[in-house]
Image 1: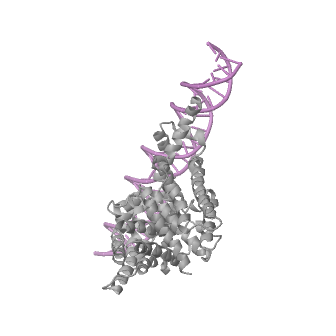
Image 2: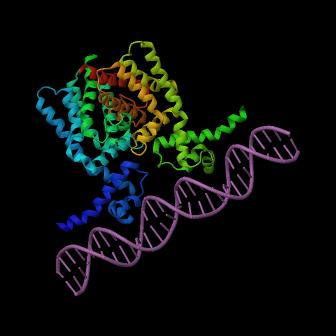
Image 3: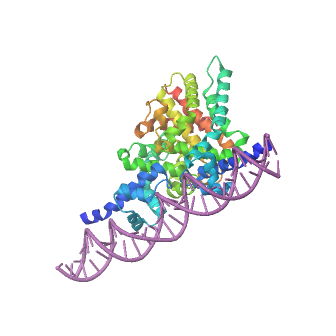
Length: 216
Length: 216
DNA sequence: CTACAATTTCAACAAATGTTGAATGCGTAA
DNA sequence: TTACGCATTCAACATTTGTTGAAATTGTAG
C-alpha cells in the first residue's frame, strides 16, 4: 500500500505542477523543465509517465473532469427530481450549475483553483475552446439547457443558447481569477473568493433568463 | 504620400500578421518567424521596427485601443447627455457598451475580429488580465459604472461590480469567437455574427442589472 | 548623378526546447 | 542473497527560439 502510494507520488506531483503552471501561463508558456523543477523531478520523467507534452496537458484536464461533472450533474438531477412532476424554477437550475463548483470546500485548495483557471484558459481559447470543451462538458450542458427549456417553455431556443453564452462567460471569467475586479472595485470584490461571488452571479444570471419569459 | 504609405506598408503587415496569430495562439504560441512568414517579410524586420517580441505584442494591443475606447466613450456620453439632467435607463447604458463594438460595420473585417479575440485572450489571462486591461480600459469602465450608479442609486456598489463582472465575461467570451455556441446550438447561433449576438446579450445583461433595483 | 539615411535582408549566434537511449537506483518475489 | 522489473536520473541529440551585426537594397535631398 505504501509502495503503491509512493509509486504514484512523483507522478501526481508532476500533474500538480503542470496544472498550476499551465493554468497561469497557458500551454505554450510552460516548458517541461519548468514543470519538472516545480515537481522536484527530472525532466525525462514527465515523458516517461505521460508521453509527449500534449498528452500531459490532456492528462491534467482529464484528472478532475469527471469529478467536476458528477458534482454538477448530481445537483441538477436533485433539483429536477425534487420539483417533479413539475419543472424546477429558473433560480434552482442556475444555482445547481454554479453552487456545486463555487461553494464546495475543496475549491479552497490550490489544486482546484488552478484547475478552474485552466478550464477558463481552454474555454476562451479559439484554438481549443470549440473542441476540447465540447468533448468534456457537452452532455452535462445539453441536460442543463433542457432543464431550462422545461422551466421556460415559451422562450425560443436561440434566447436560451445566448443566455447560456452569458452564463458561461461569467463563470469562465470567475474561474480565471485575474484579480481585475479586485482592482476595479478597490478591494470591495475579491476574485479569489468564489463562494462570495457565487450568490451575486446566480442572482444576475437568473434575472437574465427570467426576463426572457416576461418578454414573450 | 505614396512613399510614406509604402514606408509603413511592411510595418503594418507585421502588425496585421502578429495580431492574427497572437489572437489565435496566444503570446507564447507564436514565433517571430511565423509572424514574419505570414507578413511576407524577413524575421529581423520585426525586431528593427518594434524591438523585442514583447514590445511588438504591446504595439498590437495599442494600435486599436484608442479607437475602441473612443467609440464606446462617445456612445456613453451621448446617452448621458441625452438623458440630462436625469439619468439614462439601464438599457441605454448597457447598449452603449456593446453596440459600438459589436454592431459596427468595420467589425466584419478580419482585423477587428482578430483584435477582439486578442482582447479576450488578454482579459482572461491570469498573467496579464489584471494589469494590461487595467492600463488600457480602466478610465472608460469607471465612467461606465458611474453611469450605472446614477441609474441605480439604491443598489450597493458590490452588486454593481459583480454585475460588471458578468457583463465583461459575456463580452469576453463573445470576443473569443471559439465556435462553441455554434456547435452547442446546432448552428442556430453563430459566434462570428457579433451583430446578431449583440441584441440577445444586451437584453440578458440589462435584466441582470435591473433586477438589482427590484430586489432592494 | 551623388551622397546619405532609412529600410530590408542575410547569416549567424547562444540559449532553450521536446524528446530519447543508456545508465542507475530501488522495491519485490523467489 | 539474487535476479528482475519498474521508476528515475543522466547526458545528449537535433530543432527551434529571440536577437544581433554586417551587408544589401531602397528612397530621398542636394
